Image (cartoon, helix red, strand yellow):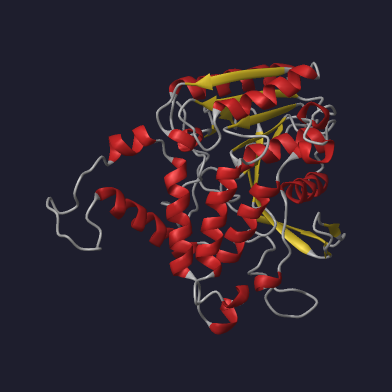
Length: 377
């Protein structure tokens, strides 16, 4: 029966070879925190890299011995007997540069100054993350991944892997993705950033020196984000116009259940996530656009892709709609790439990629069965 990978332990990889970032700055010394599940086979051909989305981390599956309630963010997808089966695959989850879960980021100490980076940490991109992940693969002795997989912002990384390192992965699994953000999506991200930047406690990003944090702005940013992750039907089904206290009180306190839910999510998020990291991750989302350097021609941008690609979208995902996934599919087909596309009829909106859906999970399992047949001795 499918079950968890059990207790897991984060690891850290240190790098001293300078990393040139897309913004022009250089990180000369940095760390990536990561976790692994399963066993790397003798010829190192069964490794799968799982890339995380906006507020996630390296903790993809399993639990910590001292914190059993902290379950990996994609634990329903990864483990023995699960769609990404760790009895077959060696799975790696990485916390990206600029993160706040252990990898080098705004909370880290700048070796040049001896002080925390704070607001001085560079702006990072999807391509920077992928380049750093490639160096981690080198350190682990993995020349080629069986697959690179992700949802949302993680899927953008999986697609970038197929473009930047076409010979270093057999397959790319791209779930709930878009080839770039629409103006509306950029607008949502900008509202979230402005909520943080205009918080009186932001202090130009150097709030830790003052012993404060822009939690009010971060709460609002998270609330805005949550609205975009759920479909209208899902919100109606979960909350409708339900009143928290069963009556109207004619105040500005929380009266509707949806208000209570959003405030709860915002408060919880502001207690553990770093505002500087949130700013940088949303900018990485905005900047991702493989076709930008090809005058908007996505077919040309994807011409180097050699991997097989599985693209999955969800019908009610209005943030990264199926139409945007089909743009990726068409560009891959124009290049005669090996591509499989599935559009799942699910009511949950963008968050569907994180949830249990039998059809979705069976599809992923079937695809990884195919990958296994390729790499099996």
